[in-house]
Structure formats: C-alpha cells, structure tokens
Length: 488
Ligand code: MG
Image 1: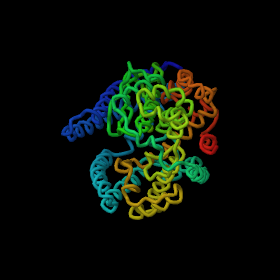
Image 2 (image 1 turned 45 degrees about the vertical axis):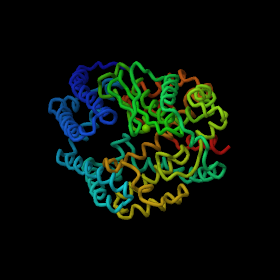
Image 3 (image 1 turned 90 degrees about the vertical axis):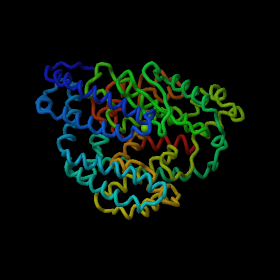
C-alpha cells in the first residue's frame, strides 16, 4: 500500500485529523444514544449533534482546506483515494445550502415522530403529507447535487458511489427468476419450524454469541457487545469497533444471526490498514460493500450446514432444548423459506424481492410517475406478485421501514448489492468456498481482509470488486448460489 508522499496530501491529512477526531466523538455519542443514554437526554443530545454537524461542515469547507483539496495532485492510489473521497464530501457540503440541510433536519424530525404514530395506528393517510414533503425535498436535493441521466442517480450515489438507475436495472435483472425460485422453495417447506417457539435463557445465549463471534474472529480487545433495540455496528477508530444485539427470548437464530451479521460489518472496519488510520479513507467504501461483508458471514457462513456442524455441540450446551434436534433440523431451521410481509424478517432468498419493490417505488416517486397517495395500493400489489402475499394493513406494508422518515431515499438498493457481492466473492475469490466448507474462519478472514477490508475507501466500490473478484457486479452468481442452496 502506497504511503502518503506528496507534501500537499500530507498537509491535507494533517488538517483532516480535526474532522477525524470530531467524527470519532460523534460516533461514540451515536452509540451511546442507542444503548445507555437516559431517555430525557434525547432533545439535548439532538441539539449537540446538530451543532457538531455544522462544525464539521465548517471545518470541511474552510477556504484553505478546500483549496488544498482542489489543487492536490495525488501521486499514488492511496493519495488518489483520499482526494476522491474528500471531493465527494465537499460536493455534498457545498452544493446543498445550509438552509436546505436545516429544513431537511426539521422535516426529518417531524417525519420520524409522525411515522411512529402512523405505524402504531397502521394509518398511512396520517403519514402521507409529511412523506410528501420528504419526497419533494429529495427531488430538490437531486437537482442541487446534479446528475446525468436520472434524478434518482444523484440520490443513489449518496449511499453507493457511482450507482445509477441503469446499473440498478442490471442488478435487478434476475428478480423474476428469483421470485420463481422463491415460490418453488416455499412449496417444499414446513410452514413453521418448532425451534422458532423454543425459549432460551438470555445469559446462556449471550455466552454462546460471545463464543461464536470470538471463534469467527472478533477481537474483543478492540470491541464489545451491548444490547440495543435494533442491532448495529459503530466504529469509533481502528481500535474501537462495537456491535449490539437484541435478545427476543425465543427463536434463537434471530439473535445469533443478527450478531454474526454485525460481526461482519465490524471486521471490515477493524481490518482497515493501519497506514490509513485517521485519514479520509479509513472507512468502509460504501454501504453495498459493507453489507456484502455482513451478509457473507451471516448467510454464506452462518446459514451453512458446515457452520451448524461446527457449532452444534456448543449450541447444545447453551440451549438444552436443542439436544432433541439434530444437525439437519437446525440447518433447516436456519434456512427456512416462507413468505414474509416484513423485510427484516425475510430469508436470504426473498430478501432481494423486498428490496426491488422499494427500489421501484422510490424511482417512480422521484420521477413523479407515482404520487405518495397511491403508495399503499402499489406496494400491496407488488408484494402479491413478487412474494405471493398481500399485506392486510399499512403497518405490515408500506409503513414498516424507518428509512424514508430519515430522508434516506436511494439507500435500499445497497442491501441487494450486499447480497450479490457476497455471493460473487464466494464464487470467484481464491478458495473461499473451500474455506467455508472447512470452517476455516482464519483463512476466510485473511482473504476478505487482503482483498476488501484493508483497502478502506482507497478504491471506488466497483474497482475494489473488480480487483477482488476479477469482474463487475454480476447477479448470476447470486442466482447460482441460491439455486444450489435452495433448489436441490
Ligand atoms: Mg447491515
């Protein structure tokens, strides 16, 4: 990995350290907010966050810093990566006026509150007006940021560098095929697995999770596991990358798979090369690549027969009820396929269908082909044709996700990219498939780390994938992975 040699880039990185420190502190505040913050601190913490965001914007857009970035002549890949990432950040902070960002923050705060109430009452009409304002703001945002072909491209690029409608259409080109496979797989399945109803002891489950992620390679000297309502990963610096889990008290695969998923996110951040520490490229390059790491460990490793065989003994120790089930039972439980209304409950086979639905309606909303008021009907019809079930109400349909309330339109496709990239790595990289079979976790981590993790954000996501697998993103690998696993 090239070190930073040019004096201009050295100066940029030196000045950037203030932003890095600020981001470190904000991450810790964000982690605290979701885990241990007392409930009434919410408002005060919100004010602090908003101020720190403006402070970051001020640091990033100071004339001296911007001039350095715009005039820099990077000499190697690392330097090029640093300048590329900073220019992206600067584009965001300079093209969106402060008034726009403040308005967006205000609308988001209101939308989140309204969404929560509307979801509780399962009443989309209550949410529709504020969602309309969010959509208008995102259309404006696209205009402010600029795009070549499609306004949605400007939003997609915020979450996945260089992602466009054209590329998304390619990524989702196999959706009908996946939908057919899914419906076929459902037919050969039990409706419900008895393990879904087995209750577990939280303390034992906690020990099992610590044991499993430790064996997979989580470095507890640089991380920790806490509890939060929605599992997440938060990276402060290279030596502090934390994950959270949630214990439902039954249906143990939920807590276990969520922990393995977050572990996958955490390893990406933990394995970034130390040479990139405190620079703008000490970060996972995109949401899609990040999600590929979490899904690789969760689905390809965690939901494999080899994983079940490897940990069956340990699972039986923590979960005494399990001795009534054999390895095959547990594997079937881990890979159960059945129509789900809720995206986050969906199995790996139908997950992409849920994502495609969201991509389609978002694109149409931004294009003004679809009005907010039509959403529930369009949503329900798409669910019926893709997944085969029709949501009985808005809560189980169009109101289920928080993303739109956070003004995150353009985010969902990154989930599909994650699934597809994970399968592509599995199929194309070195002996990854053999290592999964041998449960050689150390070997897997070395490959993922050298091909993906260590590079941080040095290369744009597409270049990184090409370097790692020799190819552009190709949904065919995902289809063949699914077909081998679920169609036999
Ligand atoms: Mg994730």
